[in-house]
Length: 233
Image 1: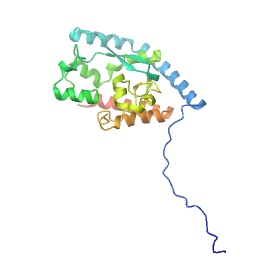
Image 2 (image 1 turned 45 degrees about the vertical axis):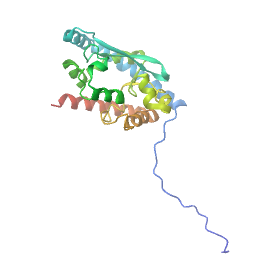
Image 3 (image 1 turned 90 degrees about the vertical axis):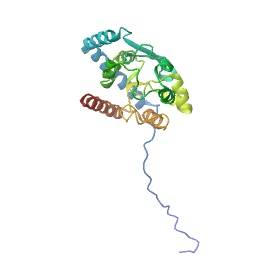
Image 4 (image 1 turned 90 degrees about the horizontal axis):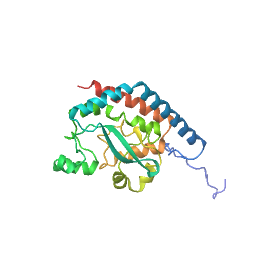
């Protein structure tokens, strides 16, 4: 063999396969969206018809608790940046939106940082039960029916929340519909904070990897979390 002839066989290094973000173009993704919308319609229609009595009972309970409004209504950012309105059974005291009057300085600081408060003093006694069982979220089923949100997706957030916490990734987050349940909700929502950056990572992971398989996984994880909450002492 000539001296200048060198064995040029390339060295193959094993690389850990990383899951690539799902392409949002093409037949497969359109098929996923169609299947998801069909599920949303089937789920929301069936739920509303079967549990209309539950809505009535909860509405009466909220009204009788303190005589205030039954529903809490607030604007959120929907798909492609469109403004949508989220409704829940009211779980807080009257004038809860006046956070400066309702929270102490430490709680107000946390609210301004995370847009939520641990052990929020504004939550009523009935409201704690509604939140523990996720019954306060039931009015959102109507938003699923109309197509404003989906059953599964990133948590619907306020516009200032989107602008302050997502920056250059804001457009990516709103490229999909927000959902009533989602990847952040089932992955330790209290531990995945904006300050640590974990909440943004978790929500954007869903946007990049949304699929029928991941949606089914989220549904079963949500059911498990609700059961554990109800059974907790």
